[in-house]
Length: 464
Ligand SMILES: Nc1ncnc2c1ncn2[C@@H]1O[C@H](COP(=O)(O)OP(=O)(O)OP(=O)(O)O)[C@@H](O)[C@H]1O
Ligand SMILES: [Mg+2]
Image (cartoon, rainbow, N blue to C red; front, side, top):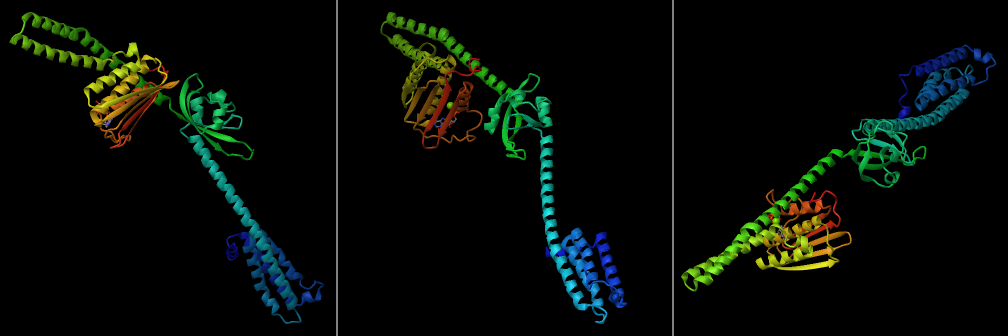
């Protein structure tokens, strides 16, 4: 405050007008006093000095401490010549006291008014800042690319920005979120973020949005509990994602069909003919009796049986044997037996819960996941043993394949490039069936593949 007092408002005309009044008062008083007129009139002693209070108080009111202090100082200086007048004419002692009172009043009133002025300036600055923030918020609100609506405690939309009006129609203000957007008030109240499948966009078109809820102006001036809903339009993204999923599902379905077709082809023609050939060789050996030709024939027949075995394996790999007729548990048991026969790895199989027949999609998907996981164990894990688990929950099938092999870095993004499709395919299958697959592995500590497939897959599945 002292700093303000040292900076009188020199640029203000009213300040100088006050100073002129002070000069006039002082000059007039000096003249009257020196001419002895005051002595002869009935003026009470000290009243001219008292008149100085008028400009001093005015300066205090107009300019605070700076104005009153400068005016009082100025008046005191101007009064000095009068005090120097011979005693007989002036009243130096009285005038001195009066001047001190004027100066005291100037400082006292000045300080109080200055304080009030500072307080008012602070309030004005805070108000200005608040207005500035509000303006900035309004600007952000109005120009925001995302649709934003403000909702009161009853779920009624009180404001909507132009993007919201464009997305949901311009008559949503004043209606409830339920009526205007199909978003239940409950959801708005409790959640902070929600993915909403269907927001009515006004003309019967339904879009997919992600909605973020934030409380604004909690307990505002009208005591209201307002919420801001920001919508992110995901309609196009969802449409594209759905198209990609449909494509992946069709691709997998086509792959399964193709495999089944090739398996049938192998089984129906080449395999049957080779079996027929082996039987004819049997007969030729019997007819020819012992001799070098029969030995050669026997050797050839042995090779032929090997080829038949290989072809059977290929056909079985292409189409899980017994899956349709006997179900998943039997098919997995058969698969694990085949793999154990062909590889030096022990495979334990455990079924928990109550095994039931699931839809063909789920059983085939589960079989393919286990088939790929077990194939990875034999090809990459260098494992001694692996455990395959099937757990039948009431509403889902859980799959677990764990090995004690070398493991690998299974963190996302660390996998090798595009050629490896096993893990990706497993994940994709699980996700197409509405489930999830997690790979946990650390180098040196084995690998665990866990999947959960809902018992009733979503409509768009592998068979779709
Ligand atoms: N059980 C496992 N133990 C150790 N490493 C594994 C295991 N499973 C997968 N891996 C590692 O992860 C990589 C990716 O596996 P993925 O099944 O995707 O591809 P792949 O088996 O190499 O080829 P594809 O399955 O397409 O024929 C493998 O190359 C291997 O390095
Ligand atoms: Mg693989």
